[in-house]
Length: 191
Image 1 (cartoon, rainbow, N blue to C red):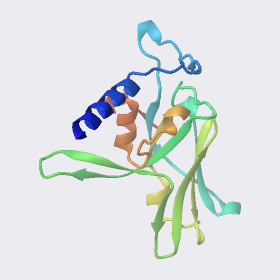
Image 2 (cartoon, rainbow, N blue to C red):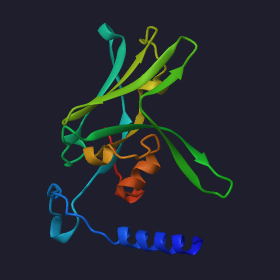
Image 3 (cartoon, rainbow, N blue to C red):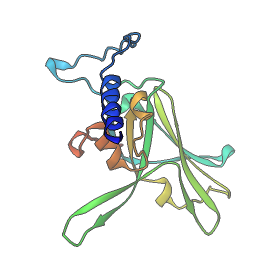
């Protein structure tokens, strides 16, 4: 009797698995991408590095400001739904094997000083990115190590990719997710 139940159960499972129901409704058509140049794939994202960024002190607001206009650094079109990630260069780490790697910190980033706290923050439009240094004390005499000759990397990420589970806190992970390498990073020095 036990064997009959097993055989009947196996037969019933086989019948149910092989059943096919009505076909569901068709899915939505995808958005057409931009054609690449000479048969190459279209650009999906871009990362560029700006070196020599200096901040201007705004007395009335007690903050420092630097505005980077995209057209000064790239011809890549930034759309309103794109994410603009700003990373600040921190330092280079040397390894025992002789290699080295740069450390990039995603903004916003806070620094705790003897006078109080400062924070680098950013905001963007489709035309530019604004980087601010705000604080909870009088910033007029802030150490120039924070305000002069800074290096930033700007990652322009399409809105669809930006909503993915990409680790945005890690510059290397972002570049890897976007299929970009160090060779793809355009480096610009501000005069």
